[in-house]
Length: 73
View 1 (cartoon, rainbow, N blue to C red):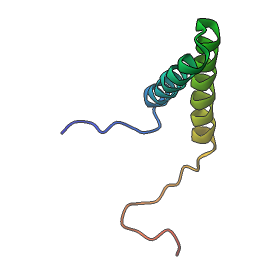
View 2 (cartoon, helix red, strand yellow):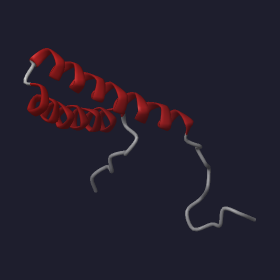
View 3 (tube, one colour):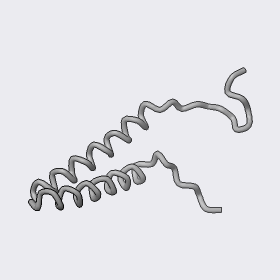
View 4 (tube, rainbow, N blue to C red):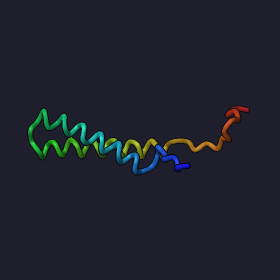
């Protein structure tokens, strides 16, 4: 069986940041028609999304709960 990919891996966070950067870059290019401003907007969107996911991943609780058992006793 293939190993399941983690949703919190650095690669998946980078891919989501890249998608956000490309999407905002396309919108910025349609509005601005200036490569420097478009690259700035796309880079800023990438950094904001990637750093946001890293912060949320760092703040998430790591619970040691066995599957099938209730969390509260």
